[in-house]
Image (cartoon, rainbow, N blue to C red; front, side, top):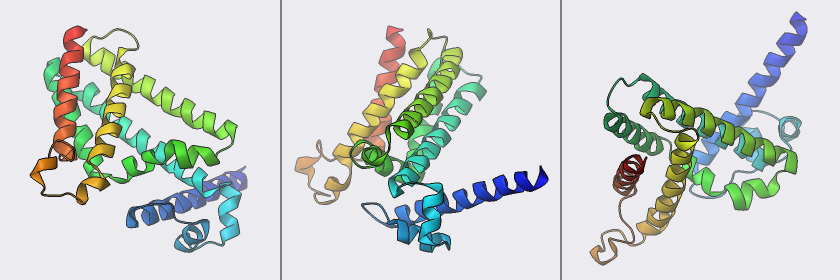
Length: 214
């Protein structure tokens, strides 16, 4: 039993090495995914070893995206659960945490943008469903923490989060890479505004309106 447990631990450790190597490479480039060969080299492994743990390189990045989303939702749940304050104060703390997290971890939105067209397109149906179910479950769990903190009806917390994600994706795409080409042109300010500022303002307006409507 001890030997088997050690084997499981070794397998998990190697999987984490692969994920970390992929995350590092992804953070170092502006677009696209690193190849399995690049990931293997960064991890100090043979290319064939990668495929023992992941069927495709896209599967690696779906696993990374799931971890990134889980880390963000864990922080969101913590801020709502720990703040003994009025609803408006809790929401303000959430928005600040959420925006700062995305500023520290820009890879999350870059990876998320590849989700439908690149990552999921190279997953088999079973793994695709597992990823979606995992995300839906984490959303629901975090939503229940929000509902308890803000005295909301069942399901409302997850709905607020999902809409916040959708708003974030839209703002990120409209103020992202394209904005760099037109930086400083005041005539295009409405099209290419600062992402962080727009995100904070839009979330504050959305949550304020949503809570007023119940």
